[in-house]
Image (cartoon, rainbow, N blue to C red; front, side):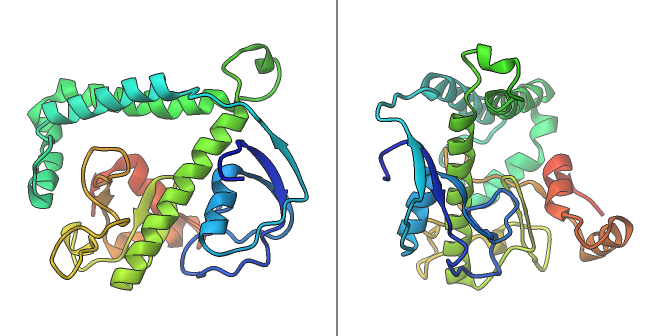
Length: 252
């Protein structure tokens, strides 16, 4: 199953996961409630977690190809090069990296704008794969199956990092939105939250600062009072991670 792309009808509602983490199997993070269609990356992760997977039906592709590789590699190379232009190249300590991030808009506003364009291209490009079905199926770029697999893989990777971090530090996220995770902290610095080994090295499989694929950057910080005010204004279901991810930077 792990190497066979496709969609699988599975009922994972009996799987028991730590409720302090969002479910890696659903886009909203709530536990699954019955049979639904899941991509190969999601079910492969379920097996990795030790769950028995029994598909009821499946649509699979016996032939596969690196459909997005050229597009991904071009965006990745552009992102890494632009981050280096903004002072966030390889070899930096975590503190040096965070300092460079804080001054990136002052370092080169033009390069910062290019960075935003690259990030928007990646997000909008994936969105195009899953547009509404009519009349889009006439276009070769309409591939909701590929988009579902990409988003499922990203969700799984995020859950794996949150789980590794929780096991090491005992910290669990307050909110998650897309690729933004919010943790409680004694201050706005990210350094105290990054999981480390007893030797002081970054925890393998956890969150690591950097620009390479799989690494993370700093989205911003807000005070507890701000979070309380936003929940009072918008309701208890307000997701603070959505606002921090959209705005970034440090606020009140």
